[in-house]
Length: 262
Image 1 (cartoon, rainbow, N blue to C red):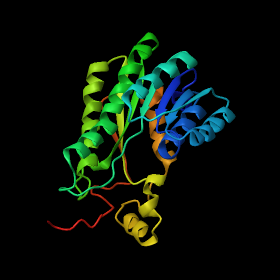
Image 2: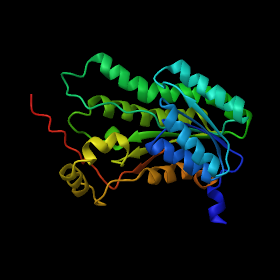
Image 3: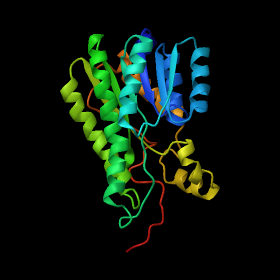
């Protein structure tokens, strides 16, 4: 019986950044749990691969290639998903990220771009989805934040600030949208995605990161996807405004960028 509470049959989810990594793993996990999914990312070929895998699980899928830094495209994505799949119940704001930068080279524009890509995109997609969710049974929103939103490390000023903002946006939006729509987030640690390949592909760097992680390894995308399924399903129905930490137990960055003193 308890496994039934992790089912998402009859639900429709939208997932951003779903061409690879955590987003792709999430789309497949939600589909395996019974949801139909709409997926968005820049690269059409990657979306097509994920869409084929979703169909193989017996679920409907809508793939929307678009630039999610364009907020009008984000709104259009939500409307397309609702029109083609008939409803919206789940929003997974996965797209985001910012390249490391030093303090003096972090311009106001760089900082604002980080906020826009990590926070504004999540706000715009959720705002567009809420009317559709309210026409149904309510729903669930999950934001992908980061442990860098609560920890300090050199080179991560823009990224960490944006992810901290997204975590608190989660708490505030949960208050605004309760009781019919739940809003939670996951603070992700170092996960083996393509974004981490540039460092994790270096054996010495990877070994150092693993040694600095209490669980002595890096995370896998499916482990984040499993947390998202829990937060979206009836199993997680008594959670809102929370940030679930799936980070291997780290309390400080396990990647040191070697930024020198000024």
